[in-house]
Length: 350
Image (cartoon, rainbow, N blue to C red; front, top):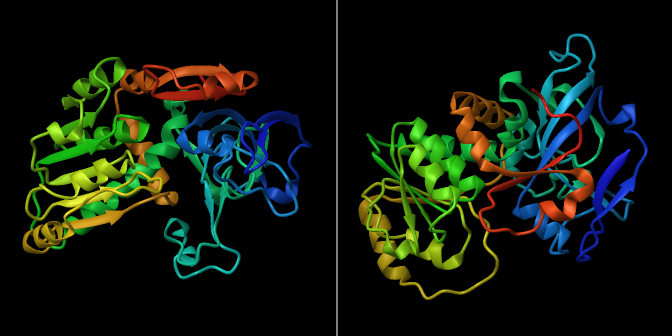
């Protein structure tokens, strides 16, 4: 079968290779991969910045944003041939910590987890794979190819779950949410904010193209330009860029009792910051700043629900490029107006 692989740590080492069909030992459910989404993590792995091959192997099959079609599944698994599924990315550590032991490997406490297509276990940019039923989340046929958005949406479903959990520490009636970054993660954050009835504001440097229109179609306000120009004391902030200067800015100037979720992973970098003033504001206003990454099964299920409730045409607008697996180099190109690129491996759902 075909598989898109890299040699971790080596730039420009992505290569389409032939691998053996997956062994039944890998799982009782056989899945034919329909599509995989391409994100910044994939681009960084392909450029050699990080990534870890499975033990004893030199190459890693990439791709963690998956959509597949069940080929065969055991009786009683809850899955049948033809079902669309998304695979959970993170696997618990071999000697589960307290979080992994209860299915919350997204909150792993010892760092010994593995992640498909990222860390220590092959991803889904291959014609087929196997998994156990509890590692697969069913996707309604009505979502079709849009189901490839479930994995990134799961990350935001978790973020919103935690935001709301923190908010319940006291009487909390949020009205406004500021999202920084209008990439796939930021737009999905905005979608879930709109679904919660909040006044949505999205800030991004891009001033034209599909991003402003997608935000407006949510009923939100798009701020094109530096986030410093946004005059808003938001009740909720979802920082989705990881840009240190943006992170530093959104930590202050929020509404009293605000919750700030940092969902973008930063590269090392220093910025000048008045920590004393920030600390004073956080303490006196009862603000909370927390980080969030990855997702567990319940967040995937919540993501499916959010996408099913969304306007299908709006979701279609997020997928700006679909190319066959053989043209993977085209999918990772950075083009103006891009939001989400998708690699197609099999016939897409109707």
